[in-house]
Image (cartoon, rainbow, N blue to C red; front, top):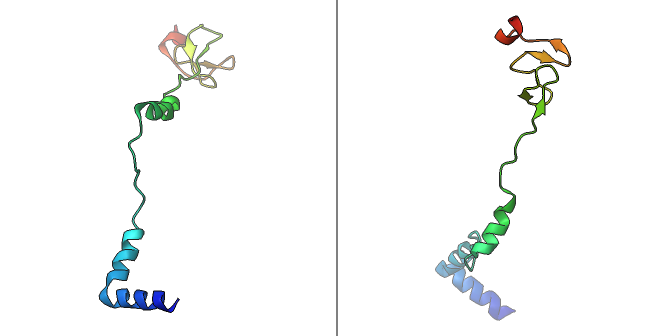
Length: 88
């Protein structure tokens, strides 16, 4: 134990201990390159999903759920938006 303490104090006096500590505090880096299969498996769930589209019960156009129809302006069976289609 005394030998180890003497060595550490000797390194500390020479500035080597600080360099050794700083060298060990660096962020870890990968030892090997990831294969393309591993990368592809990781990215398998990174795709964009299509938004859910429902049909307007009034004009049968596609619309987002829980939104007013852009074509006829109805929501839950009542007129909420003024549109050119609804004005006719």
